[in-house]
Figure 1 (cartoon, helix red, strand yellow):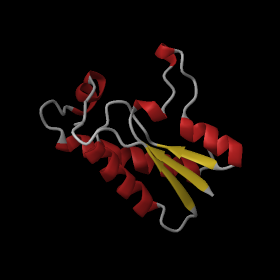
Figure 2: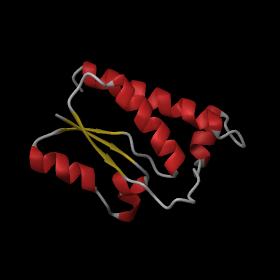
Figure 3: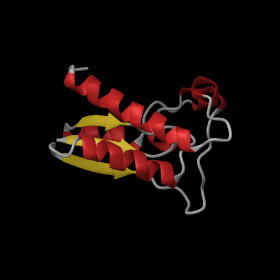
Figure 4: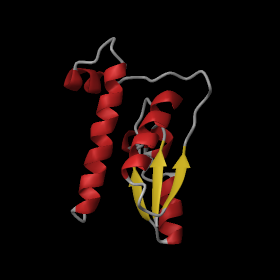
Length: 115
């Protein structure tokens, strides 16, 4: 079974803050599940919802348990500067969703290759 995890920075390691683990990683280790974590800092609920739907659609033939880290209802995406520079999405947050699709496809490809 795959434990699919998505959300904001609270579901990622944050080495700058001295945090090297997160909830879904602990759950996956405890129950011997494969972890597929696409959480990223700065995500709002709209983006978490969209990228989760994309990932789950791409992996609908697998046995999946999902852990979704929702933030407050009014939280918007916070697009980091590095991401803006890489994909030229300043003031065009809809393009951030395309980055999510690429990220989901990358994770799926890594899993198929056994990484």
